[in-house]
Image (cartoon, rainbow, N blue to C red; front, side, top):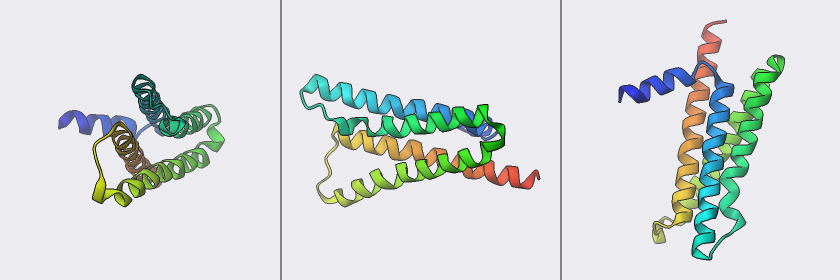
Length: 134
């Protein structure tokens, strides 16, 4: 439990790094999902959707690190991307709640929603701390 607080405390100080790390995790979720689909003969480009969100978050984080004057705007854009990345798979999972079976697609959607939600929470904490420090 103390480790979780350390991770949250560490990442709230540098949101661009958090955005890049979140992006990499989402890319991995997408690649692993697609690779699993290839191995079972049911590969679909939709398995890469978390990866597409991850690429956007990683690029926004990288740009926020390199363009200090745009950092605030880029990180707010990142939160919007992550919020959409939470809402879409969550809505899809809830719409299929009655006949939901644990498949690779469901696990991928749940993982994407969870990772995006954590990013949104960390971003809100970071934005609130930045506002208090002004």
